Image 1: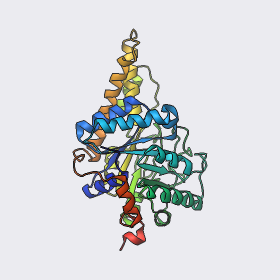
Image 2 (image 1 turned 90 degrees about the horizontal axis):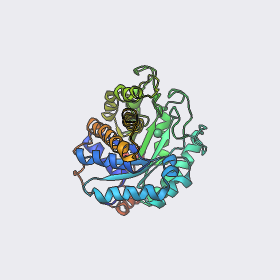
Image 3 (image 1 turned 45 degrees about the vertical axis):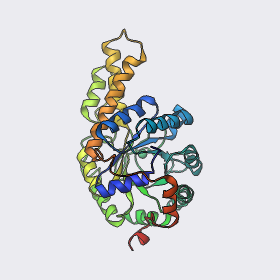
Image 4 (image 1 turned 180 degrees about the vertical axis):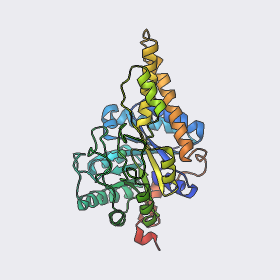
Length: 349
Ligand SMILES: [Zn+2]
């Protein structure tokens, strides 16, 4: 099937009360791992590429691989999403390639590092929404600033420096009309999220619940939501790695989020850990090996296992066949006639 609107995936997830994992890709093996897991668990899925991934793989290679995934898996709805677009131009170029969803992260300036003002964020996000919706493409915005740095993108620091203000989130949703909203509740990008198992002092689930209460029709997005499980860290360290002890977002906290409006859950680090652990194990235990397939195959399997586990935990498993995908051109009509409008003032009617 052709690539599907992310908005449709998230609307269906809201109806079904589940979350959809958004997994980052940079190469063929990662795309294959995600599709292996989606097929096995019968899950709709969001595949996403950061600017770093697009530069690493080259746009055309990456997009053609996604198209191949869609062609080879006609029963799996796949949305292709630009992760952390830093400018109108980045989002426009993703849409030109055929991405069905973009994130305009206007919480930072175009350098991807400096926090922007609220007005700057509203302005650039609104422009992307106008452009994208006209073409049936979904838009995710961000309000508040996430912690950490990934792929050179991020403000750094802990996740608590710029947590989302609920009043600003409502005003932002009203003035931009975004389909989905990433909020900052203490999570960070990368492997080093928390120095101990997070509690309410560092992971603000109460804030998330409050924002969902005010914005029931805007799909919430949790970034930096790898769980960084100890067993994946252990494999790396057992075979010569040197990861420092670290904690991610516990799966039960993500599930609490899903019960409170979280529909898109971004996972990258766990997959990176799984692949690296599998590769290290082969190279460490069988130093005579030199065929990349000898370590890429177990790496792909290790990632597929983690993805399948998350798909089951997020509740998307079994939902691939629930609905018929709506063509992007039809989605565009829904935006034009207002039926897909999520702005709180209109959706309240
Ligand atoms: Zn992110």
